[in-house]
Image 1 (cartoon, rainbow, N blue to C red):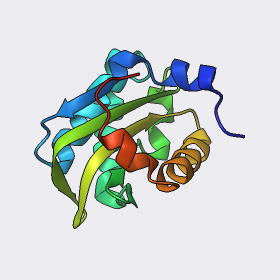
Image 2 (image 1 turned 135 degrees about the horizontal axis):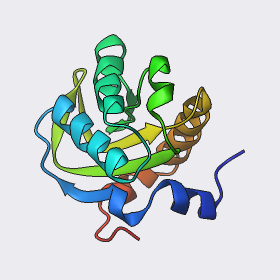
Image 3 (image 1 turned 180 degrees about the vertical axis):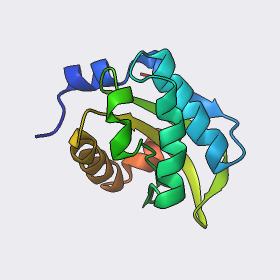
Length: 140
């Protein structure tokens, strides 16, 4: 079941959105996304290291200029509350050989991240929503 508007608002507070990230590399973007999740109280700081480790094992690039980094399965103990963050990059960065301009960080308990990842990817890859989001001028 897709998240409701109330659930998305809880998962993605305005403070977890950066409309003008200047991250220059994939790892910089992951660290920035992780820092937003930590600041939101969604994860413990060690989760960020697990996000980087996940990326070393398998790319979280999902297509259409979007990456959705998240921690490894062993990082579940570092998730305090489910949460999302969004980075819109000022310039495309290389992500496993693909240009990325939209990064959505995911923190979820257990395998729930698969549900969130799937729902977000489906929603964003339909009807050019990612392009619209990439041109957002306000967090609302």
